[in-house]
Length: 303
Ligand SMILES: [Zn+2]
Image (cartoon, rainbow, N blue to C red; front, side, top):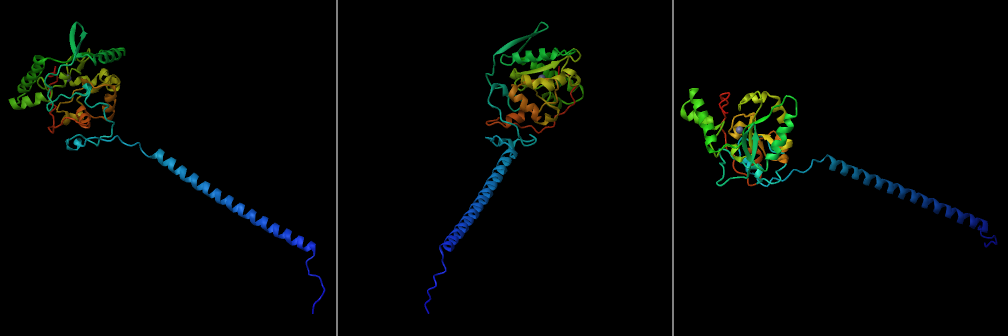
């Protein structure tokens, strides 16, 4: 039965419902916004964490090692631990020239020499290294009590061979046979053409007290000064005690060798010898010496 009762939708009710719907919409929108904001926050946090991890990794990661261009060192016996020092700027540079039993002085090797005059005696050195040698000796001797001076520079054939044969005689006098005496002499002062002195970059030092090339130099304050400061002038201890099996030469605390500041710092800091350092370089000459070097050097025989 039709009734004339008006529909239960008064304008107020309609308005009320509309407002309610709008409120619900707004609430939904706010919730969506909140969710989006939280999502954005989460993404930001993740990005930040990843960034931090990457940065920390980059900091902790060690610097990449210099690439070694040559693996020949693996065939070199007795060169000690894996090298982890930088390569020489120029492995074929004049300052790294290697003259030893396996690498005789090349034909026609004649660097330009300069005179070093000391107490009226003239010594000859490679002209390119002489200023550094002079500076080093002068600086060492500004320390009170120091009296570093040159004993041997670059002996000519006669003088170097006389050092060698003099040693053979000394060892024979100790009762060694000819072959033994010769071998022992080669391990102290090799004949001309096989000695580091022929590079004209080597120097044997003495002091006011130690006037011959002897092990006693190791006890002097001048030696201690050289071990601490020589690399800053480009010099290294050429024949360290622990390296005689590699250098083929007995421990010679008095024999220093110019290699240039950059290479000297690396060599002395790494505690290696020149043979090991050069063997690490591309195009390096072979280093072969397994013989354990006798240390039965007569105290003053190497003078
Ligand atoms: Zn020497």
